[in-house]
Image (cartoon, one colour):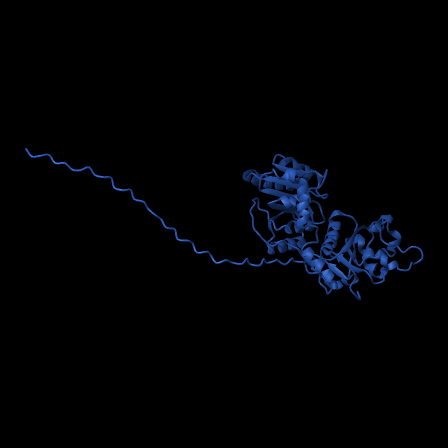
Length: 384
């Protein structure tokens, strides 16, 4: 961009609306907004018919196939003066569904929009202003900023607010409190009933021995047989097992936990867990992935995570805060200065004038001694 945009920045967080993808674009957008004034708008891209399943390079006229709910300017009708102002200053996107739009957003906006693509887009990085992939994707380039894991929404304030909503239920639970974040089926992993039973047993034994409580939640990818089996095996323990109904206690569990267990299939959950600074244990699933192995090794090297061996133990490390680092890099490349936090100077009170201690008056102590008692005159008997 020729010059830094004026504040407040107009930021769009663009995805196809899937929870894991949207969490990343919203997380980075919110992190930018914590550093400088911003107006963040969430956009959920939708495609008509089967267009969304096509490779990005076959979607030659993407504006034509967008659903009205997408909220992306289509430019239909005569071009209006100032139409470029409809576009954001920063476009933060993730996911395959956004690629036909991300690679054209800068041109459509007349060069106004700075395009940030999260994850490895699997297209040449020069098609975007900045690409932010996880380090384990091993993508490099002048406009590439690899980070550990993925951008996320976890902040101290968010954890405190979410915990407060469930405090009445969580506060009475005995410690240690163990949060168990269960994923499931993906391209590389699966959670069979047999493996689910093994995980449940490995959690049950130390919790019964240590007298702690369980905070367990499942993802949309958790197979139903595995979900039902784990819930049945562990429901006798003190704690909460969220069944997907009612308010989601996910962030409250992160806030309340003394230890966090997370299945190895999710970059998001592991990164969010590691941002708390609490001990993170990785649960093995069925399957294997070199990328995820590299990711977990990365967390281990940072002191954040360890493989789960059937027992809980604590350690300390610096919370993993890559989302803030990515947000600062976006602003630096935009040329937007981040204001220094206002620190109120401590007002030193003028020292009170010291007075010389007054000399103490000597106190005369008079000790009265009792007058001696008069002695009786001594009489002598006459000698016979």
